[in-house]
Length: 182
Image 1 (cartoon, rainbow, N blue to C red):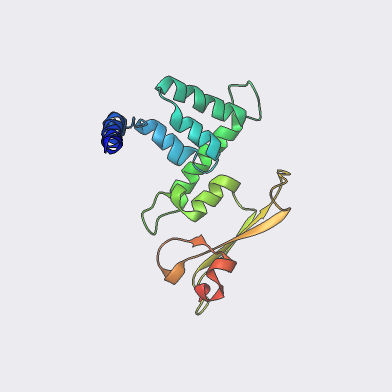
Image 2 (cartoon, one colour):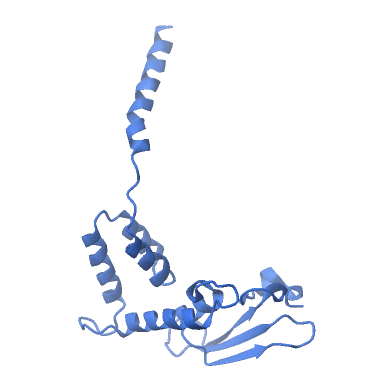
């Protein structure tokens, strides 16, 4: 009996001790940093970098992180010019200007926008629109000019508009199957 009371008292104390930690409001990341994380770097930041960024507790630390993030990717190390960073922001602007119009979605959030931001402009584009019972398609051809070993020497990305409504989406043959295109 005595042991049961002791366990009950310990449980109550532990629950009260955990209460301040549970009710403490989680510190929010300011809007400009959330925009950077969720728009500007969303397709190029690694999971480890994102987790590290979210653990930072000051704006100064976040600013240093962002500066280092871009410097690591700068092909001209130590230079004030960063062609990689400039290219990413140019691609985001292009995506916003050219994609997402059908659904009023920001272009960077569309599948075409994501592809454009990650891979750049395709070598060629082949739209397939108005071919009988086939939903609108667009085929983008890429060549791996960068020498990146994680990409094949050349590849295609196929987009389609499901049910002929909304934005172009990635066509995934194994998941979507051929009937999604008709």
